[in-house]
Amino acid sequence: MSLLLSYLQYPFVRYALIVGTLIALCSSLFGVTLVLKRFSFIGDGLSHVAFGAIAVATVLHLNNQMLFVLPVTVLCAVLLLQAGQNARIKGDAAIAMLSVGALAIGYLLMNLFSTSSNLSGDVCSTLFGSTSILTLTKTEVWLSVGLSLLVVAAFILFYNKIFAVTFDEGFARATGLPAAAYNLLIAVIIAVIIVLAMNLVGSLLISALVIFPALSAMRLFKSFRAVTICSAVLSVACAFSGIVISILAETPVGSTIVAVDIAAFGLFCLIGKLKRA
Image 1 (cartoon, rainbow, N blue to C red):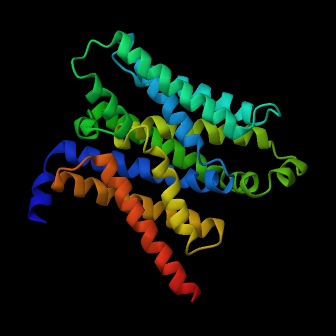
Image 2 (image 1 turned 60 degrees about the vertical axis):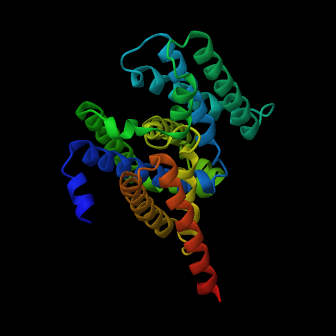
């Protein structure tokens, strides 16, 4: 505890904890919706798109990569949504095509145009997370805080509409609700969360932040509101614990957070079985 308190005196540790917990909160709120709509793998698809966009931004030597990566990821989220509604290309096929294509093109561009002497290290840090969460600037922290607050505000403001679209989209359309517009809103917000989370866990581990807290909460609770609240609390607790453990044990931040999420899922499964018994 004394060692942790000494680390908390450094601004970069406080920044990492603030951004990490906010990203975990946003991921868990919309993760419940994605899991219930059977669209969990959109996180994988968009994270690979973000990886490809980062590769392009690196080749173009852009100083602020987020200004390029965020619009590209949002655009691809919209395209994924439209492709998922296309009878010729099902949603899972569209995600697989975009995911594999973006990952391959991104790695190819980094190989062809990279000026770094440690290409393998750059690729691994982008895919699996790195210490960049511990080198956040004050501007990046405020940007993450602002975007996170917008995501939470959108979820609270449109909670009833998101609930309706999640459980019975056909009935929502019949009542006059513009379901397509709210599906688009969900896709855009997920794209924003993906871009924010890349510094935390890397592009290959982002889906864990979206899926595990929601699935864990579903082991114990049945109502949408209870699952959402439990998922949010659990996700924040796991992210905070994972970052603290990674700092104290000097382990990779992203992998440590995912490991804590997995442990929490196992614990909730056990409690759920005991509760049913």
